[in-house]
Length: 191
Image 1 (tube, rainbow, N blue to C red):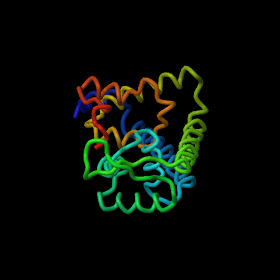
Image 2 (image 1 turned 180 degrees about the vertical axis):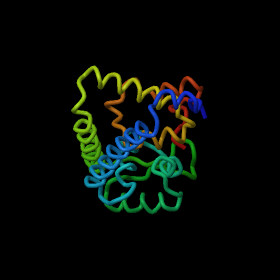
Image 3 (image 1 turned 90 degrees about the vertical axis):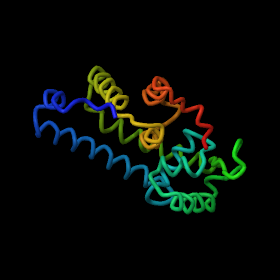
């Protein structure tokens, strides 16, 4: 892992108060995102992340989806079964592995995913609306640097980006970091 040395962290933040403020900020935004996206999903839990991730990466296997949504393989199979029964996703033959199935959103699933991502975007926009454009640019540059520095693996990238809006993520810092490390996300073939 490529984390900053502890001494640098102490210099960068003015002690426990700053860390508490940042932690509370991160939890507040995170809780608001989970609440908003779950309210638009067909069920509580990782369904919102599954639909958003399949919009971002159509054709994922259950194995990769499980990594992205943080469930066991069996739990992901049950989630996929429920989402398929609701007509939100469909299984297709995998392009390179006859034993695996690729997962895709149906038109109904695309509508649900769009609603989930719109609710996420609204929460973030509202949460950051107190910042002026220059402050927002600074925050985004800092967030990008932290994301790139803390990225550990391709698997973690799926977790980090599970609620990202693909259309809105041009010049993605996670993809750039993966490529810089020789971990081309496009070469994954979604197995």
